[in-house]
Image 1 (cartoon, rainbow, N blue to C red):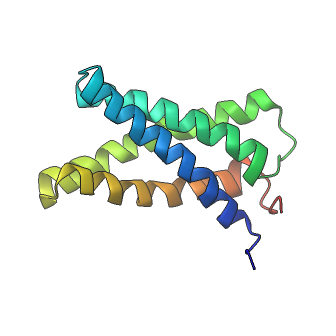
Image 2: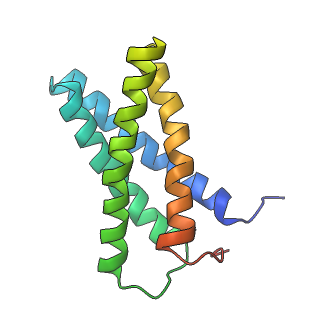
Length: 130
């Protein structure tokens, strides 16, 4: 039986958001030949947009805020998450010496838990939608 919890739905929302993030990063670096910093900005925006839309429609219940207020909070969270991501990437790549792709995977999991917590307990109602 499928577990119906906000965490599971938050995880399901993060899968397409991660695909959008990683896909747009690869597009920026490999196809558009953008510097990785610009590609990561593109990726963060694309992933955040998918996550914001799906979080609002599928995973979480509104606290009574307007759509504009929720989207503003979601994008503010995305900006903070982007800087957290850059910090972890720099740490893992420059200090620990982990290869960039593995560092991106590890960082994605860390930032997922941070984002989930902010969405579940600050932006949206703490009661699960399902």
